Image (tube, rainbow, N blue to C red; front, side):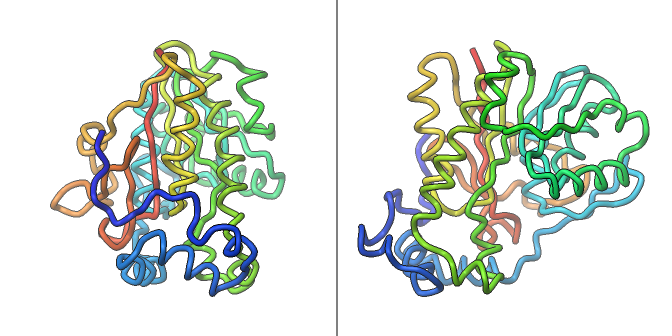
Amino acid sequence: MGKADCGIRHIDGPGGDDVKKEIGPGAFERYYSELFGERWDTLRHALLDGGGSIELTHGFLTSYWMDGASLVAGMALNVQPGDDVVDLCAAPGGKTLVLARMLAGTGTLVANERSSARRARLHRVLNSHLPEAWRATVRITGHDAAKWGVFRPQSADRVLADVPCSSEQHVLTTDAALAQWTPSRTKRLARDAYAIACAAADSLRPGGEMVYSTCALSPLENDGVIDRLMKRSGSSMEVILPESRIRALPASDAPLPAAGMPGEATDHGWSFLPDTAAGLGPLYLCILRRR
């Protein structure tokens, strides 16, 4: 799929080795202004404004607020009743709620979260929002997501890999995180994300599908991870062109503008950036299928 002109230049990192040694707000601004060019100022303001949250209500005991693009990522997994589903990095739990609603008390859903603190929050979210019949099909685990494919090979119909990422929107709004930011952060997180993406792919049954997603702006963590995954997988995995599936999603919680699904195509997936997606995102997703 040809990449839309979205103002992103796919480079390993602006400025070379000297920039890698920089730290803090100045380094952050230089990195992303070189990455996005003239678009950065508008995108930066949109990230600071926020405004993409929607209220999930249908089927839940109490309402849950989450970014509308995150709802799309969960729905794009195309979960069918009776599927065996895994959410590899499940906390805080919003996407797990979406997956549980799609299963509606059928099949199985494993919500995995390695961090004990985040796993405790996941328990609270699921217990507070899921009807008993839906909650009974969900099992919470605390394993290393990067090793899931070793312990549970070819065992799932659907896998969501919403991986830990740079979360630049959080960095921009958190002084302590911004003060410690360096360009090496995105490379390290991309390596970790690739390991989880491989584990997700290895855990799929033939015909099974996965969604890889991040809330990162850096292409290293987005299409860059999928580039590596496809080289590793050869003919055993295929990318599903996302546009037709995403545009066909029902707006059951009304997160989308009347004009239809916003966002823009990338080399392998779909990107929601708040300056062009009606405040939704940031979120990147790619849909893949095991042959």
